[in-house]
Image (cartoon, rainbow, N blue to C red; front, top):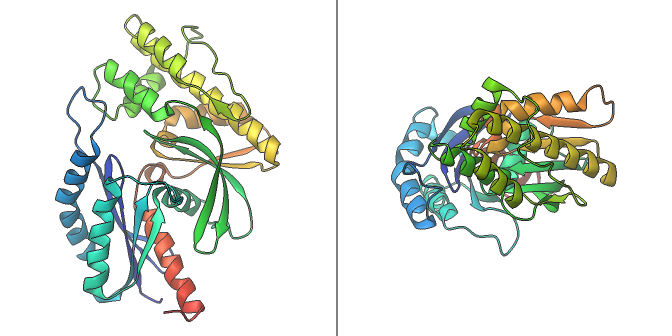
Amino acid sequence: MSNRYCLGIDTSNYKTSVAITDQDNNTIFEKSDFLEVEHGALGLRQSIAFFKHVNVLPSFIDEALSVVDRSKICCISVSDAPRRVESSYMPVFMAGFNAAKLLSSSLAVPLYTFSHQEGHVAAVLKSFDTDLSDDKIIFFHLSGGTTEALLATRDDIHYDLDIIGGTKDISVGKLLDRAGVALGYNFPAGKYIDQLALKYGYNGSSNLTKIKVDDGWFNLSGIEYQVLNAIEESRAEVAAELMERLSILLFDVSKYLANKFDIPNIYMAGGVASSKYFRTKIKELMGESSYLKINFGSSDLSGDNAVGISILGGNAFNESIFNNTI
């Protein structure tokens, strides 16, 4: 696969992403942009998001193809579902899949499909120069729509991701978005809550109760009610306390699951995992622990992106060459 490239596409609920990686999994091109959401809105309908993806994908792909010799693209890779299970489906991923299928046919190269979640795993592991070839890890997917703790293992070119914990109602990302929109920020609003919390810091306030963990599972709708009630009186104070409570929650769940499964390596990914507050506080909570290792990947690759999908496609192509199946 010398001097060969894989082009990856990911069209998630709120972000269009295109990437190109080489045979050594180096990123040659990466572009990701949030879909525009009307001020005050809490998201997009699938039909609208699909339409927005279709409108921007051609320019993203044109830009990607302009940086490499397209005759050296060996494969196309795309996310076609949220999770790699039969019942997992969202229309937005069909925007990327259709574009990928057309590219694959036009360039006469193989097309590989993966789940959006697998892309997150590959992107974060890129930061640590590992591909899960031998080990199991615990992987948190923290995004606007998902808060899941996953037991991750390699399965040929794919990852097996079994849910072992997480939220029973709303996600951490959705909670932060709703709090941010209530404060007047544009959706997605989690980064504004993060910035507010970092600027003012937690002052020991007790507007919010501690979030309880039950065998790796928890509920967030109760704390959402508390946040929306308290936020009008003290915006910065409540924002900082919310980030403090959520940081402690993620640490507590990580510690519990690490002990339960005897797996000390925890990896955090998803847009929420790019939070500077979470990273700083959880590192503080870990202290000098020689057992528990909570790892955050590159901030740029924590959120939705096509780099992980592109890496997976390149790995699949390498595997097919090794097995002489292409």
